Image 1 (spheres, rainbow, N blue to C red):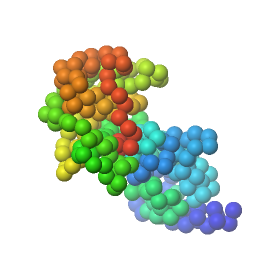
Image 2 (cartoon, rainbow, N blue to C red):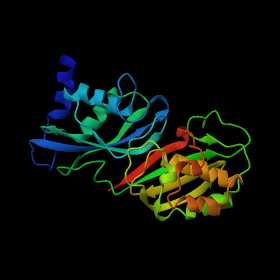
Image 3 (cartoon, rainbow, N blue to C red):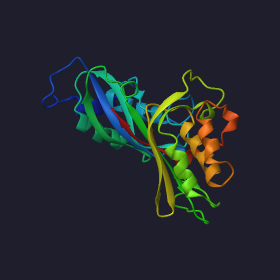
Length: 267
């Protein structure tokens, strides 16, 4: 109990410069985490998740665990460079102190990059205008010990022109029914893709896609299907037809989670 009071005093003490006192404040955090040892974002009994880990740290510092809103509910093994979380609490908190205190108690595979006061009612999830994901593919004959948990190893032949053509077809509004599991809670399968493309950096191919929202496994199934096109197992035209609401079994496999990273969120 004494430790909790000490931590709370450190981050609750002084007024925030330039910010008038509010009975309740909304805080916005930007997180970075390595997803290999997390069972995804959402708290689940008995499992190590990012939400549970962050909630425990906040509970240690604030004395209670706030309700968290998150921009993207990442799956087990998925990483993040710019995950956004928001929550409300009573009283004043100095964001810089909160960030430093959180990084002092969080484990090594998650960090708070920034903390700031957000407008009242701000929601990391509902106020997001778009999310950008990146999927990394190591395209070479030999695996890499250094990229083993951050990029999909692809030792097979690959037509990069086909990958680019598939990505070019994604821009705009399409029905992505083929790119999410059959058992789903989604009721709307159309998504607005703002940009999508492949880029090679040395031996790593990176697929980036920005859209208003994403369905479960959507990026990973897109990558698995595009890799089939790159390997000559389906044509670009077949890929394009999938964007018209084809069933899930018409698309390719779900690419491994460890190659995926939530890169940023726009508001």
